[in-house]
Length: 269
Image 1 (cartoon, rainbow, N blue to C red):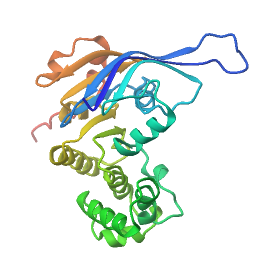
Image 2 (cartoon, helix red, strand yellow):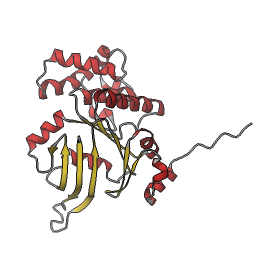
Image 3 (cartoon, rainbow, N blue to C red):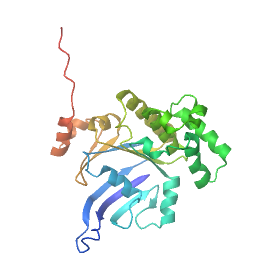
Image 4 (cartoon, rainbow, N blue to C red):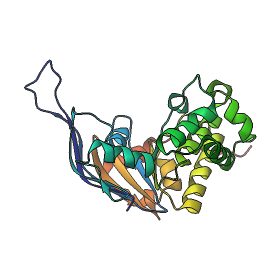
């Protein structure tokens, strides 16, 4: 299992203004897993705890976070792991693709420099080897003229092109697991479909596992093998294909399905 979360509890300690207050619970009893070749969805409205679950899984919160339960990433227990172990897992085993690609890239550095830095400084690659890898991946994610893109700055590329750059960066170290946090929500429908196709091809060809976080239940139903529905920090229902919508029983899941806009059939002229 690439990602194995069992009974994850997360609470934040009270601030210095109220030191006697109890920690505020955020996540309650989260259990989910992602294996090789799987695309697993985590859905819910804004504020339900989707991104918080991802950040907790990567142990990105500081001492203010009280975490219990088990989080195993590629076989390594992250709860209780020392900082060096956490950094190694984040560098080698897992990659995070976030919603806003512009926030993930340095605006004053060329694309090639930004993508090569991790390979050179963290993994000890030569710059020539890193550049060759970047060119290969930029082509693999559907960017034309990879050599030219490497010399460009983020503001010279569209949002869809930048999302492809961020995906290439995520794939550069051959992670076993990708966490895609609302990675397509800011894109137009056509670009969104192209990015989804890239994810699916990488899962199929590389045997990756992916946790796909989204508020769009219909999108998740179309592409995911299994969906966990999150509400107020708790998983209220888990659905699997086939017949995903037909099997949804929890009132919250039904409300998400019913809230999605549906195009009315065109009346004959």
